[in-house]
Amino acid sequence: MPVAPLVIGTTTFRAEASPLGLVAAVYTQNGGTLWTKQIYVTRYDADLERDVQDRFITSLRPADGGLIVTVEGGEAP
Image (cartoon, rainbow, N blue to C red; front, side, top):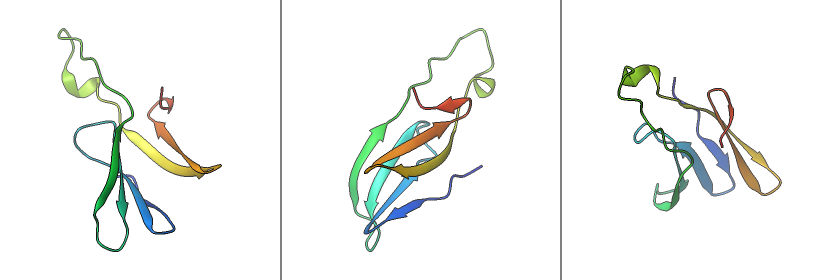
């Protein structure tokens, strides 16, 4: 399920669909990228199906001048 973008001032934060675990900050008015950050990397076990190992960002929320990213199973590592 897609995560709703978070708008703070002139910046929109969004969890990207691909690759998994990536958050981008963009200018709200023109969509220009300010920065991207890989929040986590999934290390896949070759003996398991890949789709059962995927974890997704479930929410973005502001906190004390920063950003809290929640991932399935809890806050991002």
